Length: 342
Image (cartoon, rainbow, N blue to C red; front, top):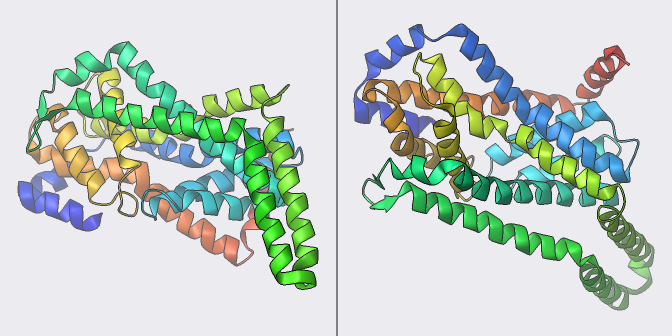
C-alpha cells in the first residue's frame, strides 16, 4: 500500500503540493475521520453483539467491540479479507462465547453483510446511481462505464446473498453432511477419538439449533438488526472518501461520492492482495479523480482516505491484538465495562 502511494506520488510528481495540502488539512474533519474509522470497532461490535446475544445472552458487549475491530483488522491484513472471520471467532471464544454459538453468530454476521450489500446495490441504483455514474463516462484503458462496473459488482453480491441464504435456510442438509463426516472419523479411528466424536456431534447439533433460532420468533428481529447495524459496521468504507475530501477543503455532492465509494467497496472485497493494497489506491485514483480540481490533490486524498478506511484500524488493531495475546487487554475491557453507565 505504501509502495502504491509512493508510485502515485512519483506518477503525479506533486511532492511539494502534497505536503502543502497536508499543512492545510481541516482538523475538525480529521477528528470526524477518526470517528468514522472507529466504526470498524463499534459498528462491527454492535452487529456481532446483537447476533450473538440472541443465542448466548451472556455475550459481553465490550468483548464484541474488540471482536468487531479485530475482525476488521484481520480483514485488512489478508487477501480478499479472509482473515476477518477467524479473528472474530478467536476473539469471541476468548471472551467466553461457546464455540457453537460463536460459529453460528459468525455465519449470521457474514449473512447480514451479504444481505446488506445485496440490498445496498439495487437501492443505490434506485436512488440514482445510474445517472451519477454514467456522467463519469468510461474508465480509462478498459473502456467500461462506471455504471456497468457498479451493476456487475452489485449483481455479484446479490448472487452471493442468494447462495448463502439457501445454505442457511436449509441447515439440515449441512448437519447431515457433518454428521456423516463425524461417523467416518468414528469408524476409522475407533475408541481413540470416541469422546471427541461425541463432542463434535453435540457441537454440530447445537450449531444447527442456533441457526434455526435465527429463523423463528425473535430471531428474525435479531437478523433484521444485524442487517441494519451493517450500515454502521461498513460506514467507514462508504463515508471515508467524502470526509477525506472535506478535510482537504474540497466540496462534493455527498450522495454522488457515497455511490462511488459503494462501487469501490464492492470491488475491493474481491481484491486478491492483503487489504486490497495496490488495487485500492489504483481504483480510487481512477474513480475519484473527477472530484479533485487537479492531480496535486490526488496523493494527499489517497493517503487520507486510506488512513481513515484502513491504516487507523490496522495501527490500533495491532496494539490491541498484542495486548490480547499477552493477557493485558482483559483488565482494560473490564475497567471500561465497569465504568460504563448502567
